[in-house]
Image (cartoon, rainbow, N blue to C red):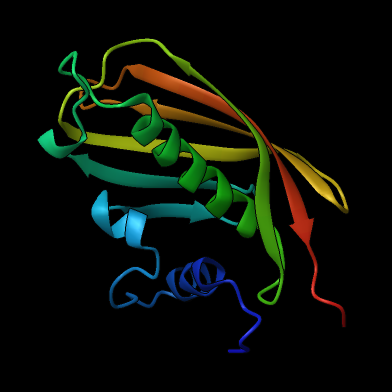
Length: 150
């Protein structure tokens, strides 16, 4: 692994190789108890499970929108990373979130997929599902693809 490697991309490669990576390289993913559940690199789709607790409640007693957006953003980044080389990276440059239901502490999954991938940008979609299987939030994003010079 090169120093230029995106650690999330390395984690994803280990997961795809059937390895169970020890720990998660991202502190926010660790804080949200993120677990990569599935990845279909050919389709550019990932599902990430999260456990959010009372630490993330706002004054109204629901999970902060920024935390919800972070869960969607993380899944989007992994979906984008599934479509690039090990030495390449992606960066979310635009993200639009829509919230449908209040998110309470509990278990959630975010599924993200590549809608269209070009040479320099990609278009992404993600949905956050609750334990009841319903949609709680959705996001669309544009990612910039950062290819390592070969």
